[in-house]
Image: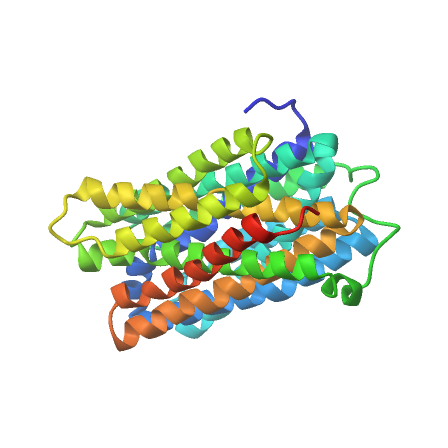
Length: 388
């Protein structure tokens, strides 16, 4: 990935890398957190819900603030500093109520990151904004790949699921200082042609793309958050093997994003999205219905292919939305990230609710059902959509 050195650009990349480790690290440690906190499926579902709900609120606020006032670099600095503090505190007390609140605070800070880091990448990229955004989400996926083994190893060494978060507080604190040492991007973030939220929400193409990104993120988070528990419950895997399956899901996603970046100039977004969504549906169904008698590598391959087909959804939809109204990218990022937050709230909690009544395999049919809707929508768009 060739790119010239730019302090702010690399601060943004590292910030997204750490965000990936934090979010997916939490997901990969769900079995350990459930044991550590003595909670059941619905308890962890509520923690995920609090994270996503707070994310939804703050990403809307941050997107609007960036468009109206700018200051994305300084806002990122404060966000990283607060994340360092939250990581120090998370799971330090075995109180479900306290950690539920900390989950909400962590989700809210990640929501601010979702708006500021995407906006800064768009501004720092200039004429190559699409490539910079693609690189940004590659770094999230890279963090997601590193998260399961990082969480597994550090949890074993520290004999507690709070250890990974204690370690993460250090790079977040350092990154906060680096952001404060950077200057704001000239001509970036703040817009003199800012549209009202009412006009943004009346743009049908943005609404449809927002619904699509909400469904996709809900499906992605549902699969990622329950991968380790599914592997351990239905396939009797060790924590190391289940962590490897989650890493392979994110490895497939990273590989797919690099490939999508290379072919996006040769094929239309609607063709790529139709292919990816259909492939996602097939790979999800194959993976969650795979018989227990199948060898480990077959399930691992299933998770890799699921991640591969997930790959291009988020960056392609995000770039399409920003192209519609580039002078309001903060609100568009906020709107899409909020839609993603809604999806991340509803679907994983729905999986936990179904699993509580039945079993996790049945619960994971919910994201598969929503992927049917997404696949049908993108196929319809590819065949009958207008060339706008």
